[in-house]
Amino acid sequence: MYIVQRVLNSLKNINPSIKAYALSLMLAKGRKNCAEMSRSIGISEKSLYHFLAKSIINTEEIEKKLVLLINETRVKSIRRALVIDPTAIIKHYAQKIEKICHDRTGCTKKVEKVLVPVYAAIIDENVTIPLTLDFWVQEKIIGKKKYKSKMEIAQALMISAKKMGIDFDFVALDGAFSFPVMFDFFKKNERESFAMRIAKSRLIKTEDGITAQLKSHQALKLHRNEREKTIKAKFASKKNKDNTYYFFTAQKRKTRDGEWEVVYIVSNMKLPAKEQVAAYNLRSSIEKMIRTTKQKFGATQCQAIAASKQQAHVMAGFLAYSILNIAKNDKQTESVDFLVNELRDFHSNDLVREIMKSKSLKIDKNIDLDAKQIQNYPHLTRVNADQIIFRRS
Image (tube, rainbow, N blue to C red; front, side):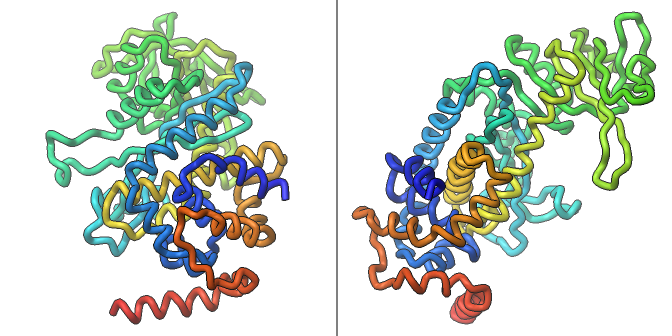
């Protein structure tokens, strides 16, 4: 019952509509749209639509709650990163969803019809708390005046995080952001530390005057059992006239296939090589968060047309993930996915009763809580889905 109490305490003072929606994402085993969640856990469909109807207000309240969780879990002695990472929510059959566009996805390695949210999350060795997001849209769709590149969105998210009063030590970015525009941004914000992946073909010039690509520079060669090495250098490309010295780190690591590869990190933080690698590796936790919010909390499954409703749906998944991630750390379990499965298998009735206690929600009081588990059987879920398709056609 610890996990149940932990979840309820975290949602104690929040809007009942948000509470119902976040708990529904945690408990529903089928698709995460209002109709399926309603059927799966036995609450009124209207209560879930009510959350989406007030999507803008609810998104703002969820964001404030996430900021509180971030501040409550801050430990000054532990290095903390603001991680910015774009992802893709595939919408193969969507036609009218606002801000839908085409972009290459890391999942299929193809150009797909997608929503492209750029996520911001606060990460340290203990917790991963997603904070907010903004959608990237192709220029030809949104128009030249309103268009923002992913780099501009990332910069806006960094500025927004500072305005919210969030305390973090540095920004961690992947290699897609390692371009002069982003380095210029960090130069203008001198107090902002960063670590990001960088292409091995980039030209650098060390203090002794030697110019070479990262992969070829003798000062970065790893010998025998060396796993990482850091040097001080500046960019030597004619296109990049940045004379600032940065710290470049070579890291030898194993790939998924068991082969060895060398990757490179650039940073403006004066740290030993192992700490440079450890700092950048905090970024990997956002990939786990993105996977879990898609697979367990249905970030890809909202059927709303308005982008604000799509955002509210994802933000409710952020809240669910954050609560369980903090509980995971307290309970010392392996993953958020493990806690989600535990809630669905053993504690769903307790949480559904908690939803139904709320006087602010219109709940179907005829539902038999004892029969709820039967509704989650896969073959019954498919039957219900077929019926929906039949009625719509």
